[in-house]
Amino acid sequence: MMLSHRLMHAMNTAAVNHCDQVRKGSGIPYIAHLYAVMHLVSQVTDDEDILIAALFHDTLEDVPENYPEARMRAEFGDRVTDIVLGLTKDDSLPDWQARADAYLEQLARRAPDESVLIACADKLHNLLSILDDHAILGEDLWARFNSGKQQQQWWYAQVNRVVEERLPGLALNRELARHVEFFHGL
Image (tube, rainbow, N blue to C red):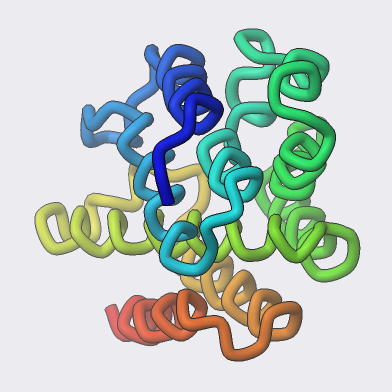
């Protein structure tokens, strides 16, 4: 697949809108995560809308003031925006568990398949980062999170389960399952 002007515009848009963010505790620019998720998704599809949605998967949740839904729709269309909305947690809910439960329900029942694919890639990259950081920091790692180790283990296992129900046999989800199993052994 060629790097189109539209995809390049999306890459730049994501970089600008997340320019002030870094990964929890690491100092790594957040855009590296967004590009990594797009890369993982690109191993499954070359559908440009899905790749763009992978870049924007956290935008409406994390920086809607920088790049609101209406602007995303105007610049990249309804399909991209609807896929991103299928990945967006409801921050109005009172706590981590309520947000996690609502997100899992959304993925299981309402989100488009494309959103489920991106969620799998997102959680795979997040878990790989957690495992890398755990190798360096050990149990001190959990101080970075709003939830503890056991909640994180539950979370990744549940996402893995939902993805398998929605997209059975997805290679990315098999990869996620391998890392979830390792994570449970920590």
